[in-house]
Length: 407
Image (cartoon, rainbow, N blue to C red):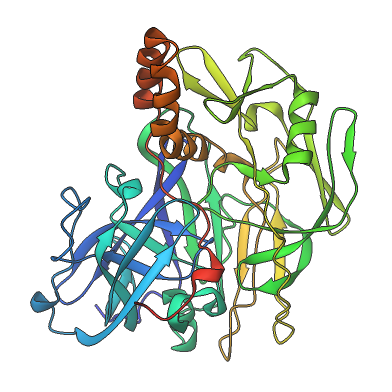
């Protein structure tokens, strides 16, 4: 079968408790199979290599000596995410989206990372690596992301891809959505209801305003990004705190999460994008984390705003809604085959879950344990149990200021 036969491809992905969505790819000739996070919040593809020991025991590893199409690059790289990090060397080979034996989209001569180090954040996660879908301007070392490489080679029918993510609750490793490359997903997505210019072609960044919940309204116009690799909705603490109050949630200092009654039915969380008002219903921003505990899928993130202006690019955001049953803004990414990606997206409401809570819990468990040891041994025991029972996280957005030449 010719590698050029499939000019568009719908790829089914698996849902892990609504907090991560994983897909299959292969690299090399013959195929070597990997499971990856399909991530609009980063721009590099990487998977572990044979020299990755710590935290890589359960991972599939790419062996370049077994691929007849592999070209050695050897340049070192390192990537820091919102949670987690990886480092290694670069290589080039044929990357195929989809599993062996299924319909695949072949992208020859794709540069990717072969990791010799990954952080503990990835150790127990089901994913082998990360498949970045963002812009080349975000990519570490200026590596051309796989899908942009496909566009430049004329592999796709249309320079776009779409994302549909399902809500499967606490179910793990079950069918949970479709990423469609080179075409619009007309099966799962309704009619186009809006376009939104990108404010920066780095992340999938655009303008939004009028964030509201209950009696709270913040009408300020701000830059936001859409990230299929981050499950919670993040924002300035002053905004998130007010929204949490309106929902009736209280902040748990130990867990660094907003706890809310599982039977609570607060009003919709509203946001305005391009003059269109969207509402996220409570069942899409309240998550059950087990043991009768529920949290808001919101988290505070306070840092200096990123306002890079890439004026050479003017992407568009297409938003779709399936019969307006609930907010379900589907990611449609437009790309320029002659230059950069022209694209992007709004967070799909079905993609909110537990990932960021677990990340933050694990990050602070050592400090928390020390504090609790000196005050309440029983509470420490319960806390450790709670942490263990929560699902393991993956990562958040790729941090742009770490986009430096590998060391």
